[in-house]
Image 1 (cartoon, rainbow, N blue to C red):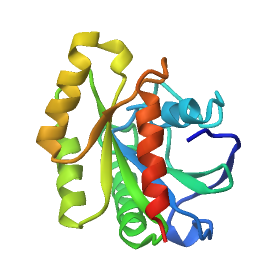
Image 2 (tube, rainbow, N blue to C red):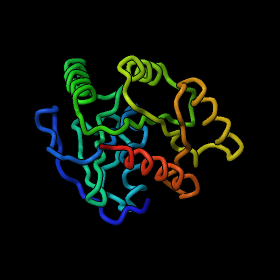
Image 3 (spheres, rainbow, N blue to C red):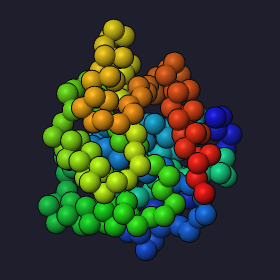
Length: 193
């Protein structure tokens, strides 16, 4: 799947503010600073479309991007460490749960897991919550350009075994693995009604 057009649509704090589309939507979830925005920029080949930061917790809203005028990517605030109050984190959690459970356009969640570390407790908690709620999901093993080539397939396989879902490697630096991610998304888009 080639991305020919990509644009930012809007930001929303809750499901009530989400744009109305009859288009399939991928919701990106992961720990703060795991690389969701970098994924959007790499996928679209449009550096700067999604704002990236070294500071965890930068994404505070649900940010919507329209790709190829055919589908939408929703970049969600990261879970885990963020330099905001507990009250703010609880508000995010409430709004995200409402969005994830009630947004009919979601064709799949994409969970981002950092390849440089073992799966973190909050990654496992999120995976369990997704499974409990029977939501469609696959995962990306990201930042694979920062681990040895010998470890990439091993790490991806281990993550898949632990999470019991499809896990694909992804790198913002090289397209080597990224075609498989695009193909996976395209297959899911074809099944959207």
